[in-house]
Image 1 (cartoon, rainbow, N blue to C red):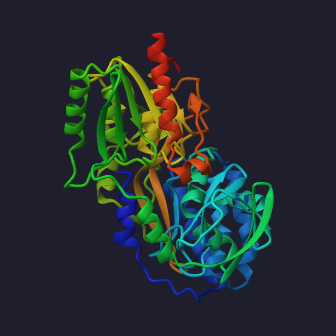
Image 2: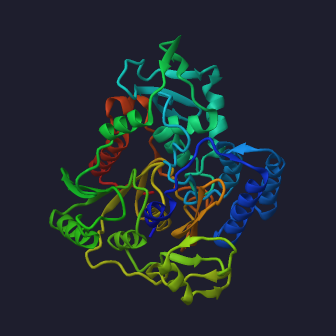
Image 3: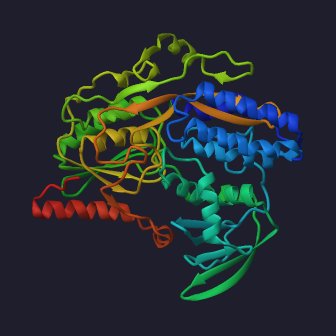
Length: 478
């Protein structure tokens, strides 16, 4: 269900944007009113991290700016802090018909691929192949200190649940030129101050196009032919890669893949299983449940409840799945409000007969999100194995996703994508803050040198940890 949002943009969201459009005060006030009503009526957990009073304050801060004409980009930026205050990585704020990270500019974009670590950024390459000082630290861009740029951008980014920062760093690593241009504008050339080997150097680069950036990223990020893969390694170790929790019609059936996988694991007497969910942004809820059945040691609950708002008639158009409308007929009133009931994860689940009994190592990162972190939440709460990598973007205690409503603001033509279901995880243990992502037992950061040299530090650490555990015959515990 979580992938439906992206499909809905193609169905409902592709509307041409006149970049020179000027919004008048009455138009913006109308859009803000619709924006506010839609969130309040549709988002099931709007006030989980930010109170109603705090949201009112944020809307009040926008009002004084609505007395003058404003560009679409200005309006977009004025409303962005409200989106960020939801702390909901599934809520989308996308200029209709545009790339979510490149909504306003396609040319004269910042030309360097950077890798971000905390309050610093390092050069990886030039998007058009020009020579650059690889792994040099970027001190400033056009006179703006890099630390201040990062400090300014992070609170405005929204890929992540609760107060996890990991997804925001993923956004910077993935789409910094687009994010930077949206908030700081573009220039034909960029003056970049870098630090390398204790020496500073000032460099000037011409901007690049979005097309050049996409071509670079396509050449570096080639997808595997199969999204699900099993590799049997030496010393009774298996490595299971799951790139995403959904499959296209021409791809392997996930249930059949799991059945064959765990039969093969059993046949090979595997004692140590690594499940790599790095880069997995989620997909279909049932996939995560099905995978955990092959790890569970006893019957388990997956979701505690699924929150949903009461149906409310609105005086503006919303694009919502017909399937959601039918399923909502079976909603009920629960202890905490209205609840969605048609979800298999609300029932007690039994372990699969071929459930793996050995040691499990789960790999996560700042792109692990949605269904991936629901699965990881169960794994963490049950202390089923060791978690290695970095904090996830998705939340430990819950996420809002599933079905979506898309509201296209009539004057600015910006799409507000609102998730309609709040998935509350069951049986949470006190081994992870409930307002954060999944925290690893072993934090292994990926540094610029790793990216540049193609070194997978997380994989290397995981295999070494297994070797040490086997050498001492001691099971590593979370």
